Length: 346
Ligand code: F7E
Image (cartoon, rainbow, N blue to C red; front, top):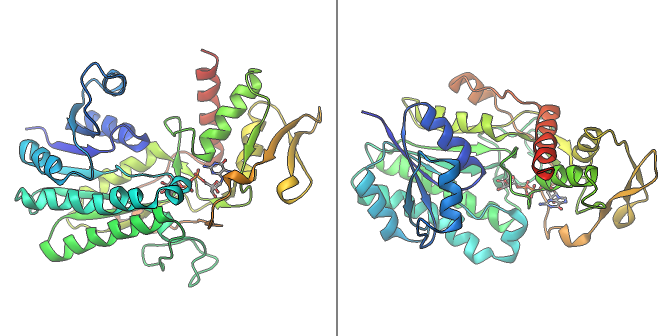
């Protein structure tokens, strides 16, 4: 019989990549989406037209009854909890809802499994995040964060995710659940939402090339991120649940780049060389050949507290899971700009 997997957040970036991966592996895939969505609803139709194989289940992460009903009806072999309010900047504006969904929502999913008597048979994946670290690893300043690094979240999102991380470990230790946490560093790609900086840049570059947009406004250009490709990372999630024992794993590339570098490489894809002029909030990025201003700073995109640098050490995942990332930084930027050039030209 085919294994059954249930994915919360199936309509998000990772949900789509993971659903396809599991379907290709022969799973019966169930996806949780929010709201009273009739089959004629545009969001329902969009998810179904992209992934016709999906069995859609209506439930909200804040609704323990609906989640429990879903567990009892489906009795999944594997549950991947990917749903969250996931935008760090937004979490400062709506910290209470972020705590309810991104933090307590994890407990609701775990309790739904336990209330259904599935805690010994259903395997659980929690989408933990590098945002739980929050900057430099003071213990190993020149190395990437590994699983044992010190947590110091710098946003309501990071704090809520840290609750989800620890409650997952607590259910593993208290009830012997096969519950694992993937501490994923930033992972991007063609399915990334335009509110995140990489997609915002790739989309703008494509639109500038096609004459649809003048320039782009960004916040902090100097923060550094360890950016990988989301398609590579969902394979790591699946591998975690195939281990005999549950555990926590960092998935990262081991490289870190500034937002500024992401912009430079993205513009190179359309043969524009960016030259930076000025300083601080007055800094601009201009086309070196024409002098045309393409990038400027808008302080509205600054955050009340920033994670200055993220760099991960995926050694454990590579050794234990046999996980490897296939797309490197240059390949990721290229893939995203090429995808947006195609979409914007439609
Ligand atoms: O920001 C800076 C911003 O929103 C990256 C989520 O998937 O990864 C993601 O969180 C950096 C920050 O991602 C703009 O200040 C500059 O330093 O793309 P982001 P994030 O905050 O790193 C982690 C691992 C997660 O778990 C999260 O769910 O870029 N930045 N200018 C900007 N950021 C945005 N969004 N927009 C700007 O205009």
